[in-house]
Amino acid sequence: MKYIAFFLLVTLPIGLLAQGQRVATIERSQGFTALQRDGNWYLASPGIALEVGDKVYAGDTARLQFGFIDGTTTTLGEFSDFSIDDFQWSEESTNPSALFTLYSGVFRTVTGK
View (cartoon, helix red, strand yellow):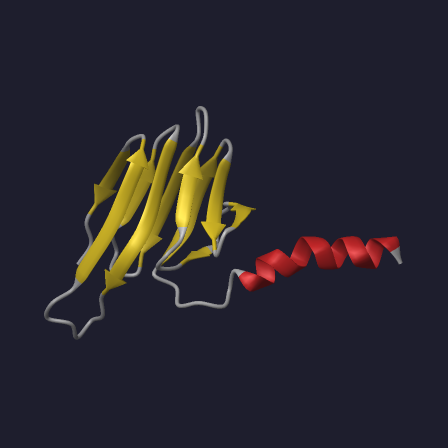
């Protein structure tokens, strides 16, 4: 019974991460990286979808790379704190827009379409 409770405790938060609309996906993670969604913190690992409102953090000697649905790639350096405040894009859109906040640290972006 202990193992079932542990399994549910570990997998439940990851299941909750798949509820919103994906605007980006974590591609690479090195060192301590984290994701904050709806006030809860999770370890950031490749394959996890990012949504508007998410905040990501890269710790000491860490790197975090994520790719947006428009082909843009962003990489955070160590001690970086970054949020996705808004992201409006589609293949048909004539007026795409994005709003991000860098609270601390550094980042590099290679734009997409």
